Length: 103
Figure 1: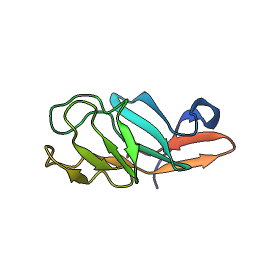
Figure 2: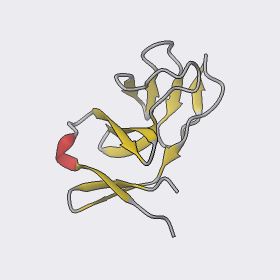
Figure 3: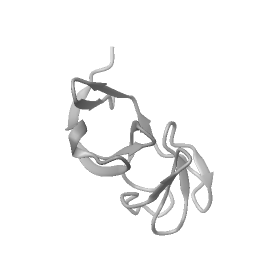
Figure 4: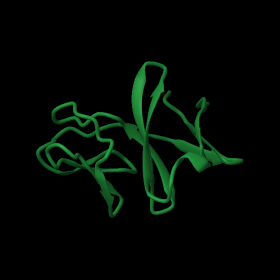
């Protein structure tokens, strides 16, 4: 069974927000997009720059440095120059808290 770790309160993110989270030695990016919460790897697989601040549109996030695009729900590459996906993690929202499983 997956273990979930509380990483934030729902009040910490605005309607369309992002927040860097460090958890067990991993850098993660918590995103709220179109009413859904997602947790993905913080770094782009293309040049290892942070995805924080990237534009979120149509269920994807675009790297603010080189324009690589990833699907928030599964980390798959949607646009070059990246060719390797990033990890996406299961999210649980309960009682105004956001938790993630990184197992």
